[in-house]
Each structure stands twice: as structure tokens, then as C-alpha cells.
Amino acid sequence: GAVVSQHPSWVICKSGTSVKIECRSLDFQATTMFWYRQFPKQSLMLMATSNEGSKATYEQGVEKDKFLINHASLTLSTLTVTSAHPEDSSFYICSARDSAGGAYYGYTFGSGTRLTVV
Amino acid sequence: AQTVTQSQPEMSVQEAETVTLSCTYDTSESDYYLFWYKQPPSRQMILVIRQEAYKQQNATENRFSVNFQKAAKSFSLKISDSQLGDAAMYFCAYRGANAGGTSYGKLTFGQGTILTVHP
Image (cartoon, rainbow over the protein chains, first blue to last red):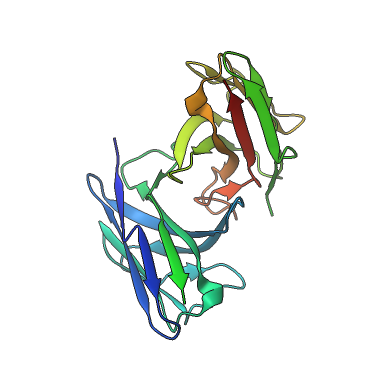
């Protein structure tokens, strides 16, 4: 089945530095990638939607200058947390939709990245 | 905007027993899809079952089945013969099916239900 590889699985960074998270669709073309944030024992909150070759669409309240999303190819999307602060510590998950898949299908999720900012 | 509500923050079940997780949603759209996802301790999201709104027949996948009541906007998940591996957080999710609709392409998740399975 479809697989989305997300790296790194966990990262610790110092406050003020930037961190890049990558999501790759391994065996399908992901025209659309979704980025979520999840706090412990809580639901997934959609941060932004990215389409290959165009600018990402951010959800209300999400700082686009802090969470930079790039979707330069049909198999790779990246989320860069810029000038990270402790409050950015969270679990980040990507999800991709197969361009060949019908609308009926759900999405394939990456395994997530646990970000800790110290 | 569409909303998904899971009113049971936590549920527990004995191994081999049956448990039902509740989900209600609110939408003004006529065509949509509903999903149940499982998130085990590894935190990998796994699709459990899906339902097309225009289908009256309830979806089933082995031990997992749904009770889809479109008029009541209810979409519950029944897990039969519960196994220890079923322990996870379960999310109900909605996705619009009409291109151009506000929820087209986006998954809206409920708050989640933590399921504990006792041996």
C-alpha cells in the first residue's frame, strides 16, 4: 500500500534555531500534503495544506512565517519550524493524498515527528 | 463549518468483548465521507474503516463495523471480539466530497477516544 516516510522521527533543538521535517511519498505521487500538529492525548489540528508547485494554504491562526512549507515535487514536502521556541514543542504529522486515488479514500499518514525545543 | 464530536474521552473493554465508540458530526453538505482512524502508542495513524455517505449499507472490515445513521448524523464504530492490539486512540473523521466545498479534501477530526483493552 501507499507509504509516506517522515523524518526525523524525533528531534531536539535549541530555542531560536530552525528545524526541517521531511515527508516523502514512496510509491505514489502526492499532489496534496497536509500538515498536522498534535498535543498529547489530543486530536490532530490541521496547520496547512500544500499542493505541489504552489504556495501552501494555512489554517487560521497558524503563522506562515514560522511554519514554512515547501512542496516542490510530487513526492516531497517539507515543514520548517523557524526560530523555534519551547511552545513549538509538539508532535507533527504529515498526510498525503494519492493523486491517482479516488475521492473516496482517506489519506496516508507519516509516522510523525516529535519536536522538543529546549 | 463541519464539526465532529466524540463524546467519550475514554472507553474500556474486556478482551473478546464488544465495544462501541460514538461519533456525531454536523454538516450542511450532502455528499461526504466518514472515517475511523486508529492511533496506537506508536502514534502512526491507521485507517480502520470508511463509509460513503450516499451508501445506506454500513461498512464492515472484519471485526470492525459501523452504524451509520445519516439523518441523525451519527457514525459509531463497533469493535467485536476485542483484542489487546486494539488498544489505541480512535479518531472519527469527516471529509467533504463536493469539489469547491469548504471541506473538500480536508479531514476534520473528532477529539478522539482512548480505548483500553483489559486481558
